[in-house]
Amino acid sequence: MELYKNTADAFVKYLIKHGYPEESIIFEWGNKECAVDIVVVADDMKTPIAAFEIKGKKTRQTIQYGITQMKKAADVLSLSVPMSLVFGTNHAPFFQVIDISDIIHRNENVDIEYLLNEKEIYEPISYKTINSSSVGKRVLKKAEEKKERLDWLAKICWVIILPISVLLFFLDAFNVYSFTNERLVFLGVVIVVAVLPFYSEFSIKDFSVKRNNKDKK
Image (cartoon, rainbow, N blue to C red):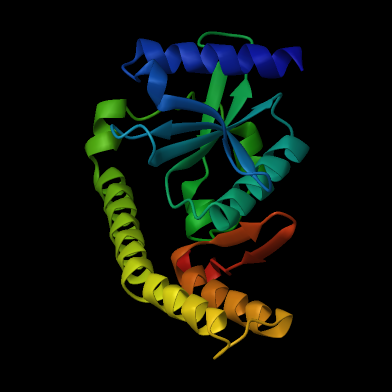
């Protein structure tokens, strides 16, 4: 645990020293199902542009486990950004970064022995470069497209769902149409089905519906 903390501290200090805004470095980014140790966000301070998993000592087991974790993060969190594992070392800068983006996003074969014996200290891409790169721009574009879809959904809710709700209320008040438990459940299912394409997961208290994101990878 101490090695993990020391590695994380050394890595974060390095990022800040080399131009990464401190507020762009987010710890434990994700949700209740999955989280990444460190995510770097773009200028909007919310869109991920790089992800790092801190693993402490580099062994076959920690490499394989780190890759498994990142594959899950890419799937569950719909992350299509550069992904790396960060291991502790006994010499400056006291960490080693291994880029596993191709393994995660292109399903390249995993050569554990090569990764285990890799001695080169890979320096993370500068914040300015990654933030203005094609990857960063693509991630930001996807975020903007998602916002546009959500704005469109909000308009649909106001234009269609609200008037229908008011109409149903008056029909029920004048005993023309009455709400039953079955009808309420059916209405709820219709709303979930209509909204789900805009979200990776839809949750109400203990009830959760998740959309499969594998086609996005």
